[in-house]
Amino acid sequence: MRQINKIIVHCSATREGENIPVETIRKWHVDGRGWTDIGYHFYIDIYGEIHKGRDIAKIGAHVKGQ
Image 1 (tube, one colour):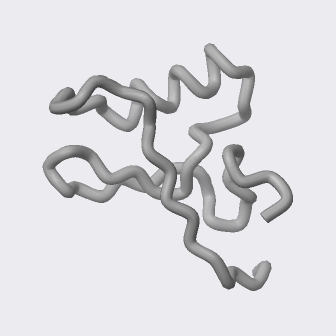
Image 2 (image 1 turned 180 degrees about the vertical axis):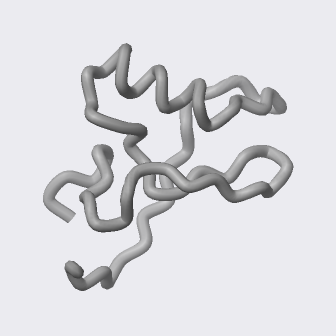
């Protein structure tokens, strides 16, 4: 497994107060951006619930080179 020595927090561009399901964001990334999966390893919704995103072994789509 690759060594992980940074945590990068990314804020999705969604409307304030709107809870977007992780599957919707995955669809935006796969269908809209052409990525192979959701760009994030973990997604925290507005209620604080943590959802698994892409496999931890894959580099996040929004942090290429980090």
